[in-house]
Length: 283
Image 1 (tube, rainbow, N blue to C red):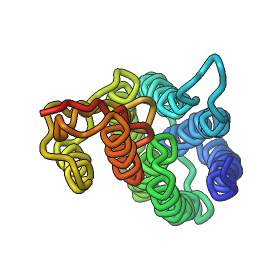
Image 2 (cartoon, rainbow, N blue to C red):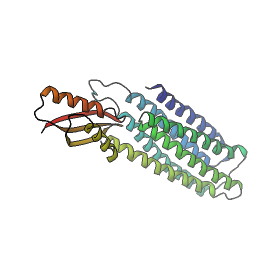
Image 3 (tube, rainbow, N blue to C red):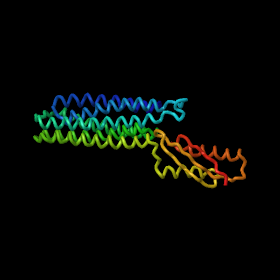
Image 4 (cartoon, rainbow, N blue to C red):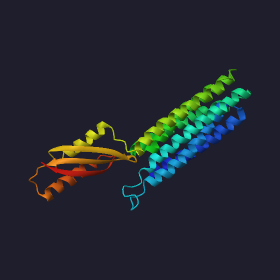
């Protein structure tokens, strides 16, 4: 695993564990369902970050006889695990909030309780920026999903802050209302992350703009007259391309082969493209 990606995933585990402990203490001390819901969200993040760590490590393994195109599909699996856990957690928060409304009870708010969501927002904002930067650097859907999840946590903690601040000011119903808002946001984000990573696993085509860049790379090679067919799909978080290029029919097999290899190398310089399969059409 790349050292930068390794440090990012390790930071995710340590950061989420520290925030979970902080929120759990504050939630149990205050009796706030919003803070406890936020703590459960961090518990979900711990499980997801461990899954991300494992899958990112697997995805960087070299190709072998059983996996001739590498292990890159492991990363979208990690993103899918994040999505599933987020959905489960979201519905669990709804259940907890409903029980809180039915049972009633008061929330004991002090400066420590109010400070916990603020600390969380600052920490998660910084983590989101870092994971987004590293995710783009290595084209990692797992780290990109983690960045989105961390950004989501900023808004989750903001909702928790509104809930406990409302309870502090005498509006106790704001606490479970904040918990409901947190749950809906968690479910929505889980859905968004899930659909993105399902697309990777299903071999979705890349964006049309990227396909045009791939064609342009092929046409830039001397000897290529035109392109007949260009098809691309994701294998994990990287792209495989099948392209048919037209060359002069009077060229020798050796010359046509050399053009094909040059086209292959030209396209594979595109960072997100892992493998190009070039077919020569004589015209």
